[in-house]
Amino acid sequence: MRTSRRLNGLGGGPLALKPGSRQRILTASFLTYPMLRTLSQQLLSVVTGSYVSGTYSIVFVNCPNEQIARDIARAILDKKLTASVNILPKASSLYYWNGEIEEATEILLLIKTKTSKVHLLSSYIRLVHPFEIPEVFSLPMDQGDVHYLKWLEEGMEEE
Image: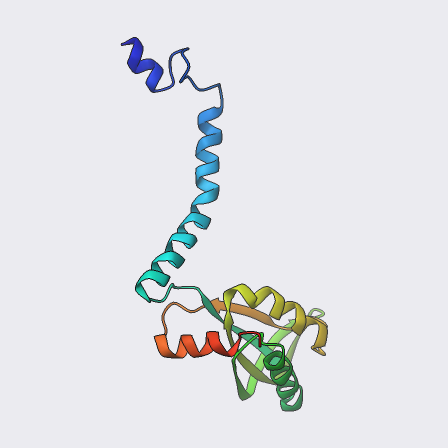
């Protein structure tokens, strides 16, 4: 009975845990799980050649006109923040601005990029975009054609 108490941390022996230690261990385990899960998925992806959900994202950005949309698209392609941008014309937008409902025709950019580049891409767009608060948000890609995703990766490699 004494041995089992020591092994499970209830006794006062060398294996006993200090008060609060179990909570700290549980908290540390909980906080490191996402990172360890991501690393294990990336390792599995490298070993098996399969896609890890969330490695790439689609970033949505509305622009006031087609010229600004093209300028932003070319700039982020030049900076290797993306390998592909779709420019979708004439999206009708309704939104609150300064307490009033506004209506506008905007151009939507669909930007495909690595999830790890979304923060840098968003920061750059905020710098060059003419809107005071540009609409920039992303969704992770759950699935995708392996050849297309490889092409995306290669298109964002620094030369």
